Length: 218
Image (tube, rainbow, N blue to C red; front, side, top):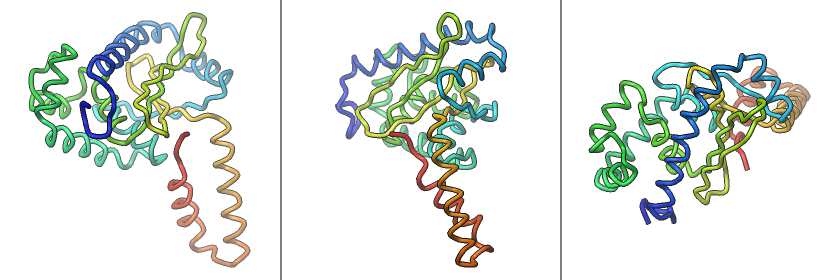
């Protein structure tokens, strides 16, 4: 067992991380030939909705925050969780870095890189998936702009869906259209009920609270 609750051997985790690294590199080259319209059309055919996320040095934390809460606003907390996790598991994380052949030789060196922007995002993607107990689906494009998924299966019940289709190398959130539809129906019902009981002043607040609390993927 590498980390508590993760029944995955080192070699399998190493293979997952290397697969993600190769996929990210290949997708960056392929994405240069896809414009935003082509991307959205390809996603639409696959019944997915793409939500663009701010493209800054905190992009990966923003996308996880949005996947978990339907909002980027908690990205600092997500980043803090990763920092704290690595600091509490310094030796184990150092061994993982060495085993996967990372350019970083210590946990401290990796943490310093986090404050500047990610050079090895595949590590953060994997660690955040573990911390938040989510499997990870990465959406990418194959030949002919066909949308495909790569699954990082850590054995959890819930999953997050992240797009690596952006031609800048940034990450975006992806939601299935049926999920968006169902969430919209739920929001309408909440508004109707609150209006009927005359609690219009609290409508937006309560709707938002319930909406976010139920946002997750199976």
